[in-house]
Length: 120
Image (cartoon, rainbow, N blue to C red; front, side, top):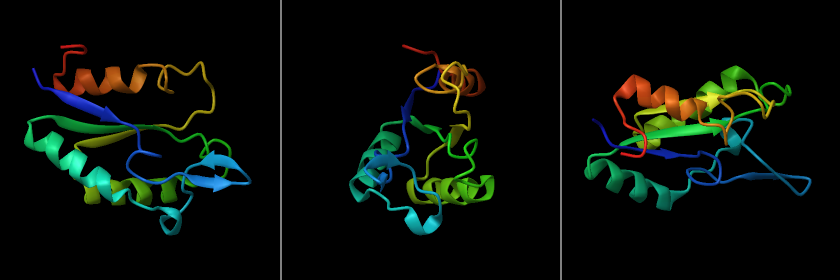
C-alpha cells in the first residue's frame, strides 16, 4: 500500500486572499501567492516516500466568482511549483456534498485510485 499526505491548498500552499475582511481563495493567477516554506514541507514528504495530494474546496466556482479556467490555471501552477501527485477540488457550496470538506469524499476517492489504506 502507498502512504499519502493530503493537504489543503489555500492557507497551506498559497496565501489566503482577504476580501472585505473575509478569508477567500485566489480568483486568478495574479492573486496566487505561494507559501515558500511549504515547498520544503512537500519536498521532505516526497523524499520520505509519501504521495502528496491537495484536496480543496472551491465553492467560488459555483458562486460565479471563479471560472473553471482560472481554477485550472491556478491548480496547474500549484502542481508545477510543488510537484504534488494530484489535486482534487470540490466545486460545491453545499455542505452536504460528500466530496466537500470536511466530508471525506475526495480523500476516499484518492485512496481508492492510488492504493492508499486510510489510517494505515
